[in-house]
Every structure is written in structure tokens, then in C-alpha cells.
Image (cartoon, rainbow, N blue to C red; front, side, top):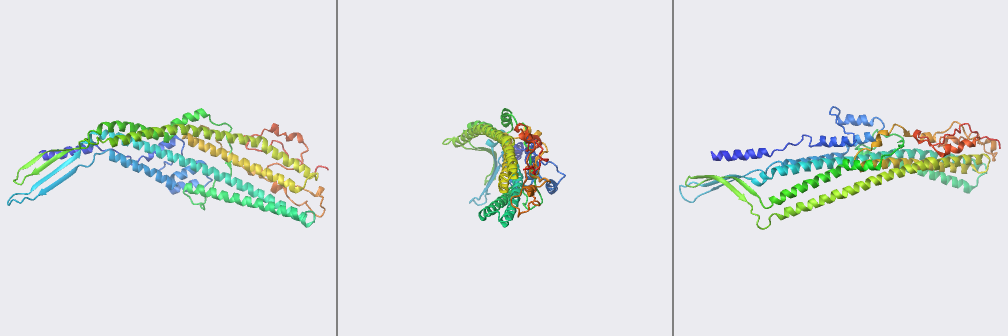
Length: 534
């Protein structure tokens, strides 16, 4: 009877150690953490992965759709989620006792007619049993910390994808602008060719125009290569091929008028940063583990079980068995020191992250404010000044005070200003992306992001009118009346004709309404006539 009872008790002990593991290894819980922080998690089970990708790539990407694609298609993201399986294995192991050990021996006697001496027994760790609940709590806490860490990695990946998205869109805009500038250089060279053929341009000046046009073409090619490089970087993060049929919008979104309050962002960071939450969880777990280790280190490894022996004369002996590691020499102090060091390291990590997160929020917020300040400098001062300089250069060219090539060079400087403006807009969105990553969630001001986009075509769209030089041509050999320079060179969305109403050129006290993303002053130059009498 005793022989039967002990194994039953051992089985019951094993059953008390069972711990349930989520079927999806905690992925759904990670998705909940991400959804609360504004990450678009794909939760539909009726749509296949390929169907989702086809749907998202069939139209121009947004920062949100790009993140959704990366979540389901980026191999690194899959590897990150696989870490949940490792943590789940630890939870499974900690929620169970070690398997009992069965031992058997049969000793042959040298006495004739006597039976062999047979011994067998079953033994299990009693130490595992009394520490089972604490080990389960620790493993469950580690699993929670792992889910928080995985969520933090996903958020970091989402920020990387969003940054790559803005880099690509900005690079496309710059490439489009540079292509237009290269066209203006080609027009300038064509005009120089006419002057040179008519004998009104020196060989040196002609060579300089050749060099200038070539330099502009090289810059355009570099911008085109940069746009392709940024497309490749984004494609890699999305898990797509760079040659696949997908694309982004041609324009960046219009910057917001108002930004988030720094104090509100700092409070959000304390509550939303998953890496900080994971560090706090691990520190608390190690503090509990240190207490358990401190009192169990004197216990040693204690195993209990049952032993049965059949003597050679046929007598049978059955009884309990005990194995106990007596902590005389080491008292398992190494375990205590190790856990204590891990706890100190975890506390230091929490302290480091607390300071680093606060500094990251301040840095990203300052970068956002700096970008806004530069945007205002472009819109209110530099761009109006460039527009004014082109208009005045147009007037001087009309009165033959400067040459056409000087006018075109002034126009190219205006183009460079527009490129600088586009790059600052890009920096603005990159700073906001970094700020969202610093607080661990989407920015509250994201609700004010509209559908308006900074369309560079509005600034480089050609006008219907052309610059007719036939009325003031100092070189009679060259007919300029059919040379349409204005459509290819006017990228500002305003005519370069002479203003007859100069009072309207004050640009409304240099204030430019960016909410409608019109970088030009409100003055209407469409009726200005380049053929003012002179």
C-alpha cells in the first residue's frame, strides 16, 4: 500500500506546479500595449498577410501604413516577437518542479540459491516544492517585463520606419526641385549658345555657362540618387523590394501651428515608456528574489522520496528517503552575491533610464522648436527676400542694367532657398518622430495633423506668360521673342515681371500664411507686365 501511495503523492505535487502559457505566447498582450500607444496593430484574422500588403501598397504610403507593413513584414520584427517564446519557456520551467528521479539497482549475490539484492526508489526535490510559488511569481514577472521590452523594441522600430518614410518623401521633393533647377540651367546654356553664335558672348563666359549647367545637372543626379537610396532604406525596413510597385506621397505634410507642452510630454514619458516599465519590473522582481535567495541559501538542496529494497533472503524493506545538501562550507553565498549584484545593476538601469528619458524628451522637444523657428525664418524673411531679389533683378534685366544670366543666377538662388525650406520641413517631422519615440507614445498634437501637404509644384509651377526680350534686345542678331524662359525657371509660383504696384510687394508686413502652405506673399503679380516702357 505504501509503495502505491508515495508515487501518487509525487504526481499530485507535480500537478500543483502547472502554469498556463498563452497560446500566442503573449503577442496579443504586446499588441494591446502598442495599441494604447498609438501603434496601428493588425488584429484582423480574416485578412491574409499578402492581402493586407496588397491593400496597403496599392496607394501612396503614409507614415501609419508604413508602420503597419513593417509590423507584419519586417523579418527583424518577427525575431523580436520570437523573444516572447524564450520568455514563455522560462515561465513554463519555473512553474514546475524538477522531474523526480527514479533509481534502480540489482546486485548479484555470490551465495548459491539466494536472490539478487534489488533496490529501487523515487526521489523529488523538496526545495523546489517550497520555493515553487516564489519562482512562479518571478517567472511571471519576467514574462511581463519581456512583453514590455518587446513592445519597446517595436516602438523603436516604428520610429525608425517613420523616420525613413519622411526621409524618402523629402528626398523625392528635393529631387523634383533639383530636376527643375537643372532644366533652368539647360535653358540658360541654350540662351548662351545663341549669344555666343551671334558673337555677343565671349568664349570665357560661354565656358562658364557650360560649367554652371553641368554642375546643376550633377546636383540633380545626386538628388535623384539620394532619393533612390532613401527608397531602398525604407524598402528594407518594410520588408519589400525596392523595385516593387509601391510609393509614397510626393509631398511632406504641412507643419502644425501649435506644439505640445513640454511638461505634459514629460509626464507622458513616465507613464508610457515601456523600456522604463520593464526596467522597474525587473528591479522589483530581483528585490523579491534576493529575499527568497537569502533564506533558502542555508536550506541547500533537499530531496525526499521513497525507497524499496528486496534482500537476497526475500525480505522486503520500504520507507522514505532523504537527501540533503548541508550548507557547511559555502552556504550558497555565491547565489546571494549574484542576485544582489543583479539587483544593484537593475536599480542603476532604472536611474539611468529615468534621466536619459527626460533628457531625450527635452532634446527632441528643443529640436522641434528649433525646426519651427527655422521654418518661420524661411517663410517670413528669407523666402520673401529671395522673391524680392528676383523681382528686382527682373526689373534691372528689363532695363538692361544686368544681363539675363545674372537674372537666372538670382533665380537659382531662390530655388536653393526652396530646397532649404523643404529640408527644414523634413527636419521638423523627423524631430516630432523622435519626440514621440522619446515619450513612448504618439504625440497628443497628432490629432491636428490634416491632409494638407507641402506641394512643391505650387512653387515651381510655370506661368502662362513668357519673357519677351524682343522689345529691349541689345543683340539684334538674336531673336528672343520665341524663347520661353519663364515656364522653366519660375519655381516660386509668382511672375518675375516688373511690378507696377510696388506697394503690394510688402508681403503683408512680411507675414506669410503657412496654414494654407502658400510660401509666397499674398501680392498678385499675375498682371505685372515685363514690357514696362523704358
